[in-house]
Amino acid sequence: MNQPQPTLVADIAACRNDFPALNQDVNGHSLVYLDSAASAQQPLAVIEAVARYQNDDHANVHRGVHTLSHRATELYEGARDKLRKFVNAASRAEIVLTSGTTESINLVAQSYCRPTLRSGDQILITWLEHHSNIVPWQLVCEQTGAELIVAPINDRGEIELDELYALMTGPVKLLSLSHVSNALGTVNPLREIIDRAKKAGITVLIDGAQGVPHMTVDVQALDCDFYAFSGHKMFGPTGTGVLWGREALLEEMPPYKGGGDMILEVSFDNTVFNDLPYKFEAGTPNISGTIGLGAAVDYLQSVGMDNISEHEKALHEYLVDKLAGVNGIRLIGTARNQASVQSFMLNDIHPHDLGTIVDHQGIAIRTGHHCAMPVMQRFGLSGTARASLGLYNNTDDVDRLILALEKARQIFA
Ligand code: PLP
Image (tube, rainbow, N blue to C red; front, side, top):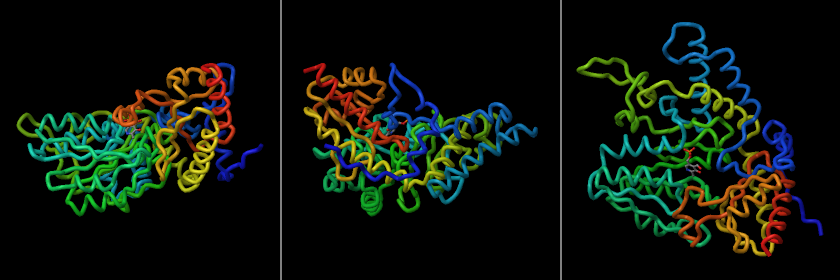
């Protein structure tokens, strides 16, 4: 019997052709890429923007009077302006360019928390978090004597909101949680959570690594204090990312790293730090990558974030439906609001074996703990298989995955 086809956004089908890496055979089969949550493929527009800079404009930024340096600076700072508009930051001073979400969160841990936290203070996170949103807080707790506390999740992979709110008491100075869980796809109800945290006087950081590639993000509407994200999950180059922070908070924070570009004046007696956002950007930055990230923003906006969300939601529903039809599948993560990530187990097949078998059929999925070991512990697992969708995926990709899983089931029967 034919399954009903989901209504996908028509123009998105054509986007697949924008991604050269998708047009290849892997292990004798055409590639099906279902690992965008780990790293998304890059459209030609991004690859060409980076190549153009490397070919014609390569020079250091902010430092030279010569033409190439001017061009490089214009392109680099132009990317910052695009990123500002993309997340609706109030000013470009609030867009700190980093190497990714991990660095952005570490920056807040070391620059915001380390100088201000004391023994008796608490940092609040949830069981859903990626290691990048756990370990930097453990480090700063060790350095300051503060305590890390964790709000639980339910069997669907949703934060237990009542318990989260009950933990928002006086000692909590910072709440840090993901926009979207990379392991389970749960989309957290940020507006409600941030409102409650603000009322309790708690500063809020959002780990947006899995948020920005899939939905419109407006940091002013969210009303959080920091929002961190990575370029390579939003079709940009690796080693790029952003920390958005409220200007008033960033102003108060000391620099995170010292070096060139983050200063106005240096003598052996005294150093005057540069203005925002440069105070946090020591050393030669990832110029080509950031220019590529600017091109990725252009690309996302040309497709339209609402179109992307709609397409991925329909495709995720199709994926869940199809997976449910495979004997022995157990879905891990069934939140009522879920983005385009689906973890699962197939009978008692080890996820790595499953990943290897489907790879032999040209299908790339992620297997393991997804850098979210506490999530795995919560479900009593050492790892899962995970399919994550991007704007370039379609129902054929899902059908190919299902066929490959059926094959794996037979091999292990
Ligand atoms: N947070 C989440 C939710 C993620 O999915 C990831 C990467 O998988 C990160 C943080 C870390 O991102 P990066 O390695 O780009 O710094």
